Structures are given as C-alpha cells and as structure tokens.
Length: 180
Image (cartoon, rainbow, N blue to C red; front, top):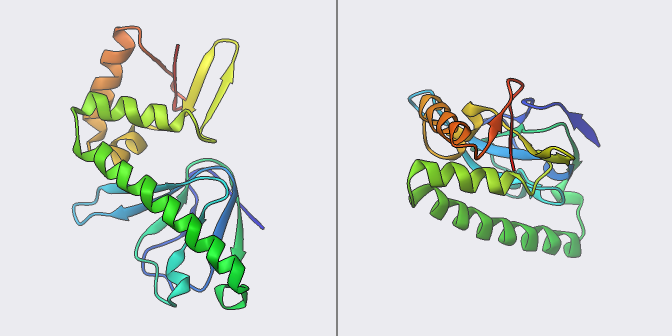
C-alpha cells in the first residue's frame, strides 16, 4: 500500500506498465497531456476501482494518473493474480467504461455552465468533497475543472464568478468550492 499526496503523479504516460493499481481511498484522475500543453481529464478513479490496466497487456502507460486528493493505492502484479481476481478487475473496468461513456456525454453536451455544474455535482459524491454545518465543499482547482470540462481556466473562472455573484456557490482561495 502506498500513499500519494494531492497532485502527485502515480505514473506518467510512456512509463512501463508492470503494476495494476487498486484505489483504496481518495480520488485519482487519468489525464492526457495534449499537444498544445493543456491537460484533459479522461476519467476519474473512485475507491475500489482498478487502474493502470495497461499492465494487463504488458504495455506502457498511455496516459498519466494523478492523485486529486490524498489517497492510498495498492499495487498488484497482474501475472500473480488468480483467475477470479482478474474477473473482478474485468467487471470493475466494465463499470468504469460505463462511467467514461457518461462522462463523454457530459463533455459533449450543453453549455460550459451546465458542464461545470454537472462536474461539481459529480465531485460532491466523491472523496474530493466534505460536508459540515455550513455546507458542502468540493476541493478542486479552476484548472482541474477546466481539464474536466474541455475548457480553459479563464472561462471556468469567469463562470464560477458568475455563479458566485448569483449566490449559487462560494469559492475559497484554497481551491474549495461550496454551494448551498
């Protein structure tokens, strides 16, 4: 079991993939660095999910994995896994594929304002969020929201300012967004 801090890379694109990972706690995102230097979030890994599936084929990682929150990750040798455990991995990857397909719809439909709202609602049900007596908080940067909504940081900042002005959410300087 290994711990990773928020924003820490678990693996990078192009690295040899020898280990299959299982997220025990926290939130991880799988990202692609685009030729223009932007980062695109491809999928989110939730607790209990497997990732680094390139290790099942003995390939190199096509994308990078980054901790979105402090997290704990278990590394597994796919060659040493029993048949039933590999079936569990396959079932989990199939569930993730359904989430990825829904995520693609999220990116391709609606105005940016709606995409941002859907993304914040998604994060509200993950380890990137917490609740106290004052409200629900999501720890995410403007840049991470832009990466996840196929947008720019500037556009996200403007829309979050509009939502804040309309009283729909509050933003904190530490990167948390909350709404009531």
